[in-house]
Amino acid sequence: MAEPIKVTDDTFSDEVKNSDKPVLVDFWASWCGPCKMVAPVIEDIAENYEDQIKVCKLNVDENQQTAAEFEVMSIPTMIVFEDGQIKDKLVGYMPKGRLVKKLGLE
Image 1: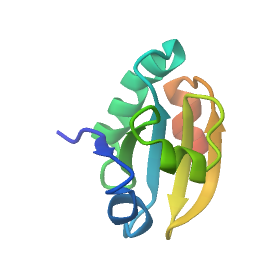
Image 2: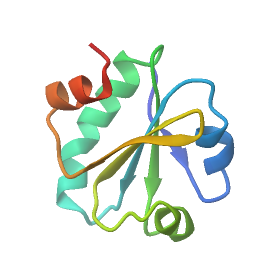
Image 3: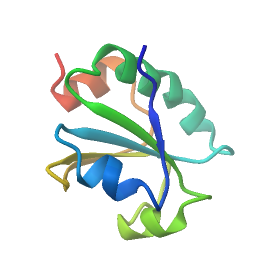
Image 4: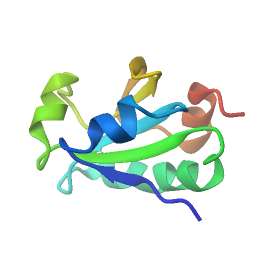
């Protein structure tokens, strides 16, 4: 059973930029209500689509350098990376069906 990988400023490049498959990174914080709402959706995608996409979570309070690098101004922000480059940036809560469709996983 796959779970989202917790990434930090130090591990971001290895886990995300150097990944051999697309990566969904959830930029979140513990005090953020919409982040708590989207967390089960992120976990479900990590579990059910692990063969298609790698799922990571980055706490913006603890990893401000990476959040600033990708201009994360609102959370939750989910950024999709492919070959180390930003493919898509999604801001705010999104139901599972819509997020799965947006990610092209169906």
